[in-house]
Length: 416
Image 1 (cartoon, rainbow, N blue to C red):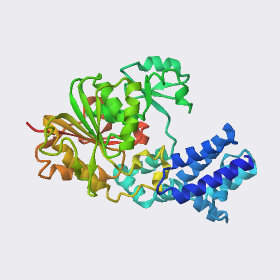
Image 2: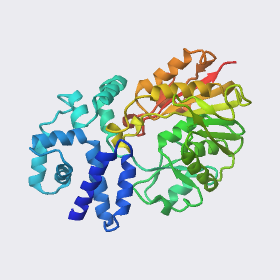
Image 3: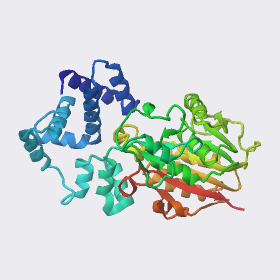
Image 4: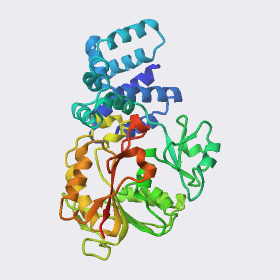
């Protein structure tokens, strides 16, 4: 590769090392690549692939540097990438010899998961506890790059129409609205994008919307609406009838959602800016407990803040930055308790995360059901159309079983 591409890759890597705790990898790479106008498309693709590959396999790369007598620097990692992708037989042999000294899945599956596949100890242990003998397979799948998936907006189009327009695309296996792209292409250039006929949305996220079972003319309250990916999906399943109140504590995220609504043809969404104290307790909202919206919603959909450890296929930096569980369980519990007061009798309380850890999932739901606020709720069974994702009465998608990001879901129903 050219010296300027190598220099750019080193500088971007060093910026990620310095700022990865506060900025996600994709934002750093995208901003840096766009700023370097002199790079051609081949150079941009090379350095992006090199950086993401080294982030995914950072522990392995560090181990290989030690085996080969190199300092674990950005330059060394790029050299390993060059050897891994080279057609030079000497480089191939050198890499093969070094790789032979790493743990293998046949002889040391635990070491293979932690070193060769580069999963931190806490994450590796959680995967082993959840899937047992499938842990290595799960780790390998999580290290794969996720495909680009579209959700066809049923208010404006149908999957068949988009499939005909995008060469090589094919329908998703589980979502009735999904289209998988055969390769990365500029989304804005696909016919129908400007008209709002589709959005980029991973299939697991689409299934989380399906799991909510939002129906036309219902009142839905979405907590943690963010930029609105699931909001738009909910509106489509409701045929743009009824009402969605999209809640978030970020005015910037809600502004992004509001900009997306007209293009999607969605008119039933009202955004609501929440304020909360340091513990996550709402301090101002039009439906504080006791207000007119208490027990008024058919469905309360909680897209809970979490570590995002289930999105490693597209966000491999979550292994190293931003994946600490920290205060997430406390905040998740508070949101679930607060959201429960807004569900009407017989209504649904949906709890969703894109995290794999039980401490953010089952533990949160079970603690809620055993609390005073949860005594009026029960767990619904997984609907038959999503039976492939049933783990008891919980929803969980997996990369190695389903080819999806890891989503967890619980559907609770107020008794009566």
